[in-house]
Length: 188
Image 1 (tube, one colour):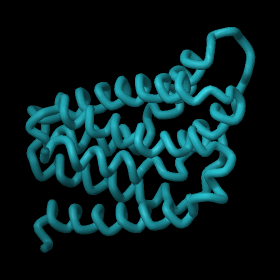
Image 2: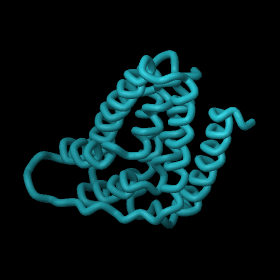
Image 3: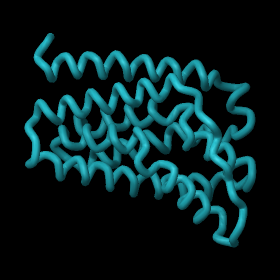
Image 4: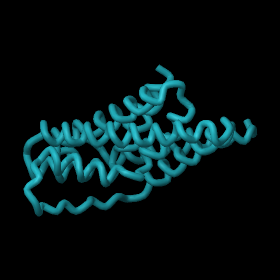
């Protein structure tokens, strides 16, 4: 459970109001087919989470636990700072005939690659006993954050206070990152 829950919560919080969530709104508005969009997002989220967790696992023999903890702190601080900045919606090109599932998978996978969620997942997986559970947790967190986005689409911003939720998540990341950084530097 220690390997599954932190990445799940961190990924869930990191996705709110992020560009990937804005992309999910665009996909839902454009295609009007939630099931293949959610399947594409789920596959992309799982593959990205597996890739980042695997990368985090490769770091374990190279650096010590304090360095991994400091990297986790930096990931949380960057996620917090990023959550406080406004996000621009990605453009959705409609060329080609790849299908809704492939378009969702490809667009979401590309946009999620190198995102703060991947960085957080990598550092949390490096601290976890089970890398696979860390990846599954992060993938589920990403999916859980995007399910209401796809199902509510354009109504999301009027139904849920996305900006407020994003700012709240950003503050949580900043506090958690600061505490983790101070702990890794043995200042508290």
